[in-house]
Length: 181
Image 1: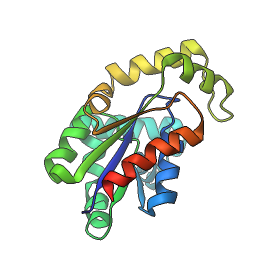
Image 2 (image 1 turned 90 degrees about the vertical axis):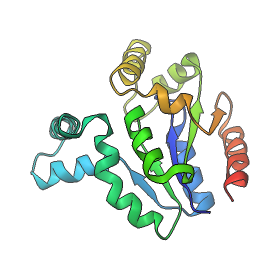
Image 3 (image 1 turned 90 degrees about the horizontal axis):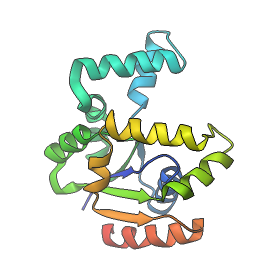
Image 4 (image 1 turned 135 degrees about the horizontal axis):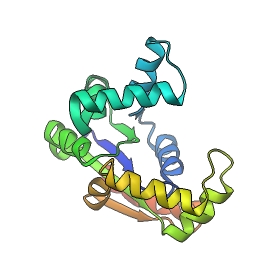
């Protein structure tokens, strides 16, 4: 059975590592939800974070909080017609509901969870876009309150606790892959 698998979690939980590992283990293609925003900003010649933010806000003003699911729907359907697919950076409850409505039981969610203290430790050391503890807390609150990110995490089909090593994370993801295979 083909699957659409969204990887969700708060910043520093290990979503990127989980996504890269899943791609390597399954060979499934990945759709980055933000790519629709990047592509539209580039089409307009409005590159960079400010241009992307303007496009993202415009998308959501026009189509609501499910805007990125709607913008990516043609690509998801096209790939899903021939393969399982991994979704990266699906955030909102409304995106979750839209995908669940469209794909039913073929749509699954894997939440990666790590405690705030573990995520703070990781984010402070992260070479790309590190965050201080207060910046991480602010981002958590914003993603929960403004992006409605808690819903998809709470309704995940699987939750992997990522408090240890990468090898431990990968072993836990292997258990999910067994169920999906």
